[in-house]
Length: 219
Image (cartoon, rainbow, N blue to C red):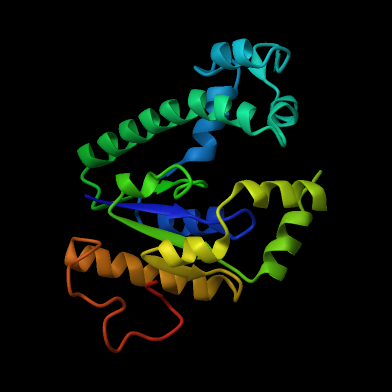
């Protein structure tokens, strides 16, 4: 089974790409959804976060706005939070991959917002970065409820720059030119991976000769 790591900065269209991959038959583990479960009522992370950040747990669940305020612009607090959450998220990802393998999946996807920041590329066979022009990214993010330019700047400051993510990626998928372009790029990746049964082969050029430009880019 080939494991693909899907990532991209905020507002780059990662969730849309994940849904497209799932529609193509590749099971996807949504790390954000895993975190929501860990923070929800009865979630495994709730007791540890309650101890580390008093006052952020309300009615048995972690208040995400309160937790966000507790770690906003506080690198030490953020590290404490990551030390609690990251091992639990990775355990959930391992369970997901084991289930996918038992079901006979040929490709499985780990949707990880901070893939490179947490060295998650070491746990996958190839990485996909979704990317769009900054103006498109900014417009998407600021359209979200409760989002401000200050919050957006703070989020970007905690994430690896898009240019660096693209440099490190095995595949860069454009998401600013319409869903059809994005879908075609992802379909190209899935076809290649299924055909060769490996995401990386020494000496193999990606994309192969004759592939339509703009559908897929190998950084």
